[in-house]
Image 1 (cartoon, rainbow, N blue to C red):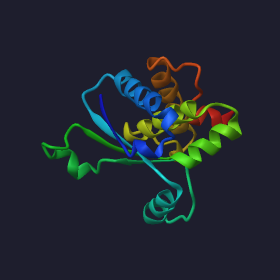
Image 2: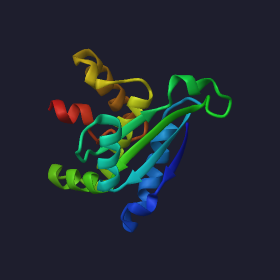
Image 3: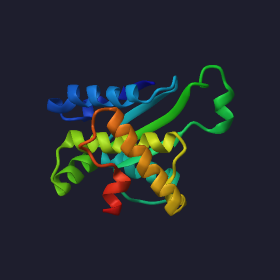
Image 4: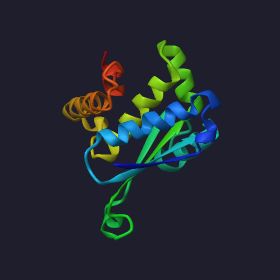
Length: 157
């Protein structure tokens, strides 16, 4: 799986190379030929996206934007899953609140967003939430990040 990383300059300098390596490891762990984008944004941009797409005026940690069905048939997008958008400030706050490091939080948010791009949606009910939780665990393990707990499992625990 191929991944493009956008706005890495929003990630604190001391974490940039590790974040790039981590995201590429997550992408490599998925054994298909599709690609996705991870874009880092600030709180103001996240609020704008929330207003535009979720009709909410809040900051959240991660949003996923799967490629619309009608665009999957175009030759230039047929291998594109979509975009994952991560709010750097929110990820940093959550890492502090949960007592783990920023890299761990970026891994969890990236995998959570990737699962949404792969078709999982924990918001559809308990069965879907369990399926997404299992998918998150599997991707983290394949990327040799088994010590990290997925976002769904973290919210259930």
